[in-house]
Each structure stands twice: as structure tokens, then as C-alpha cells.
Amino acid sequence: MNVLVLLGSLRPESTNRQLANAALAHLPESARAHVSTLPAGLSFYDESLDTDERRPGLVDAFRAEVAAADAIIVVTPEYNGSVSGVVKNALDWASRPRGAAPIAGIPALVLAASGSPRGAQWAREAAVRVLQIAGAAPLAETLGVASSYAAFGAGDALLDPAVDERLAAVIGQLLDAARTPAAA
Ligand SMILES: Cc1cc2nc3c(=O)[nH]c(=O)nc-3n(C[C@H](O)[C@H](O)[C@H](O)COP(=O)(O)O)c2cc1C
Image: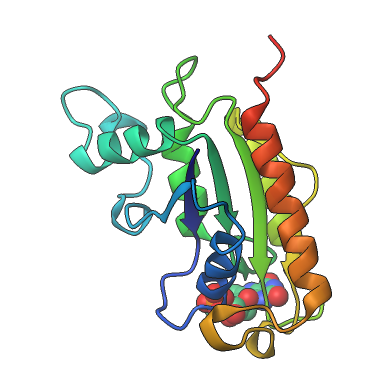
């Protein structure tokens, strides 16, 4: 099982990075998983660059990384009521070429951490919609961590056991979806 994490916050102290680490801690030891460093370096999506002659090499590397994933976890902050631009741009690149998009059919889970009490609900809803339209297979269920600046302890563990149990449950759903071939 190869799990790819797309993280929408670039800052080192990111609470979403802590949430990504908390999620990775629930994966079985047999899983290979990593937080991609490539989205931060991708240029803004430009259709005129998306040709065999002009496409940046990093795009090919990112598309290969996505295509090799059995499951994707999107972890995004909420910026002005929506998904982070870093994640949106990465998903735009992963959604092309039409008809052969590397992200097509890959089960995906959306997580978000926010200092607000709503747990970045709008960002989560936006991320699910983008994933659906890009052709991935997002779970309907998402998980938002509210009041995120006080939500994590040592080793980025979630302090609220109920939230951590929900995180384990949605990770379990994602792994089940990745093990179950999509209906033709
Ligand atoms: C440009 C900008 C817009 C933001 N808009 C929202 C928002 O709409 N809703 C919200 O809950 N938080 C909003 N925030 C706060 C972020 O969710 C908060 O900074 C969050 O902790 C960032 O995630 P990180 O800790 O992973 O970097 C915004 C922050 C920035 C910088």
C-alpha cells in the first residue's frame, strides 16, 4: 500500500503538518507513505506549458508520484473559505491529461486543521469537490480538527482521544477503499 500525502500548508510549524503526522501514525507498518515535497515547487498550472515539449520536469515527477499512489490523503488549511492554493494547484496538475489523469480513480481522504471552531469545513468541502471533479474517488467523510493550535501534543499526537479515534476510523475507510477495486 502506497499512501501519498498532499499537504496544503508550507510553514514548518503547520498544524496541518501535525495532522498529517497524526494520520500517518495510524497506517499499518506495511504501508509506504510520505508527505510529498513536490507541490511546493510546482509552477502555477498553465495549459500552454502542459505539452511534451514545454512541461516542467517537476510536473512529470509529481504526476508519476500520484500515479504510483494507492491512496491519497489531502491535508489542507482553510484560506478564505476554501482549500489552500498549494493543494488546488497540485490537484489541477494531477487532473490532466484529460482521459489519462494520474489521479483518476484513486481513493482520497480529506483532513483539515484550523484554529477556528468549525475545523475548516469549507476547505474540506471544497477539497472533496475538487477531487471529485478531478476524477479521484474521495471519501464523503472528512475530518476537521478545530482549535488546532491546542490540539496536538508530543510527537504530533492528537490530544483528544475521540478525535484520534475518528481519525483512525477514516484512515481505515481509506485503506478499505484502496484495497477494493473500483466498480467498472
Ligand atoms: C490568507 C489566510 C486566510 C485564512 N482564511 C481562513 C478561513 O477562511 N477559515 C479559517 O478557519 N481559517 C482561516 N485562516 C487561518 C488558517 O486556517 C490558520 O492560519 C491555519 O492554522 C493554517 O494552517 P497551518 O497551521 O497548517 O499553517 C486563514 C489564514 C490565512 C493566512
